[in-house]
Structure formats: structure tokens, C-alpha cells
Length: 298
Image (cartoon, rainbow, N blue to C red; front, side, top):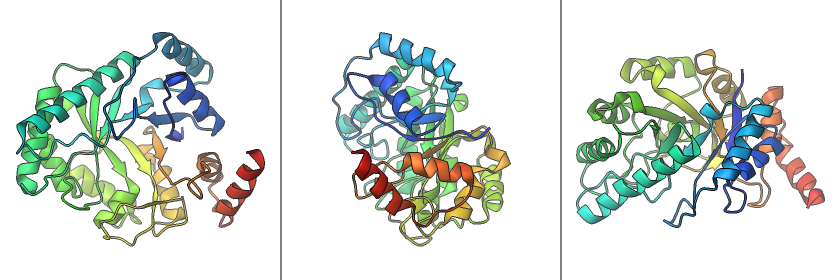
């Protein structure tokens, strides 16, 4: 079964129910959200009544809640421990996000591993693993390390770096990986032969660790290390490659999440991209159609 969705909002007044309704409006059957703004620490109380209403509606819509994903905020950086106060803030804030996941019943949270900010890759890997070991072991939530594009001092643009972090994590039951197609391509992986890539991943980490795939095209050529997402089929990765990844049998039960850019920074593309993915046929006029249709709707 194809599990396809996108990033959706999580607003104070509607919370999980609002996230679900947005998901259904896109014709999706899974989704990902932040439990609060990704760029700050402001958080509001989880409304249990809205959560319960959303869970009941998901049952009616045959949505597998165990496959729904939360994304940790960008401000968490476990890669540099030079400033102990900042490092412990990151650890404790991530603990708080995981507590919110537990309250919501979410099983998986995606995390950018972090940036070493000058202390070096090897030290950054140790710092990330150390932070994860402070968090894991007392939670049922699995942290999914996202593969990164390699811009700046990011850790996790190479599979070997992800593997090293996982090897240092004590609670291996609750550590996994989120593949990001744009990041992989920008990091230098040629994912046009995706089965070859999966074989490499399996030998280094184990394919069973893949719990989520962020499906994005890229505005840049392979190895650019820039991390600029593009709409499906309109970038350097291409529609056929992304379709092969989305429908790969080895990842059949893994949620595929779109994080593609809004058209003209205004119109959500997800309903249209999901329909195109389901049809397995690229429409090179899609962006123009989205602008025209959404302009009429609004």
C-alpha cells in the first residue's frame, strides 16, 4: 500500500484534528507535522479532546496513526558541546518534544543530527550520540536521523556518519533513519540507481532502520551540498527517479512525505503532486495549473 502525504500545519486551535483535515484535503493517507514552531521554543498545551477526535476520525479514514511522523525543530543542535548550557538546552528541548510525541501517541520523530560548528566531524558524531543516549532508553518514541545535504558543518551527509552515530547509541531499538531524496542527491549520492543505494545503505546501517522518506526534488545538481528543495519532477532528480523511489518494494510500508516548496510561496502543491504521484505520470504544466486553480479557489 502506498503511504503518501506531506508536511502539514499543527495550529493551536485545531492541533492534530486540523493536521488530519489538511491531510485529507490533499488526498493523502499519512502526514508529518511540527508540534510547535520549528524556529522557536514557544509551545502550547496539547488538547486531549482534539487528539481523541482526530484519532477517531483517522480510524474512519483508515489512516495508520503509527505511520504519522513528527519533525523536531531546527533549533536543536546536538553536534557541538563546546558550550555546555547550549548543549543541555538542546538535549532538554528534544526531551520535551519527545514528551509531546508521547502525549500525542506519535511513534517516530525526525531529527536533523546537528552541525559540529568547528569541532570536527568525529567530535560532532560523538556529541550527537552522547545527547541521544541522554534521551533514549526511557521512551517508546523512535528518533529518526535525517540524511543531510552537507551544507556548512552538517553531520549526517554521509551514510558512514549516520552509521557511526547509530553504533554509539545504546538504545538501538529506538533509533532509525529518515531518507531525504533532495539531501541525498545534494550530498553526492546518485539515487537514479536506487536499488544500488539501498544495498549500500543495508550494508552500512541495515534497511530495517529506514522508517520515513522525505520525497523532494532538488534545485541543484548531484553533490551541490546546498539543500534547496524543488517540486516533484521539476528538479535535477526527476520524476521517474522519484517514482521509482516512492514505489520501491523494499520501502513499501514506509511513509513518503512531501516537503516541496509552495508555488509562488503561496499555493500548497501537495494535493496536485500526490495526484500526479498516484497516476505515475508527469505533468510539466503542473505548476501553472496549481497557480491558476488555487487563484480561482482563493
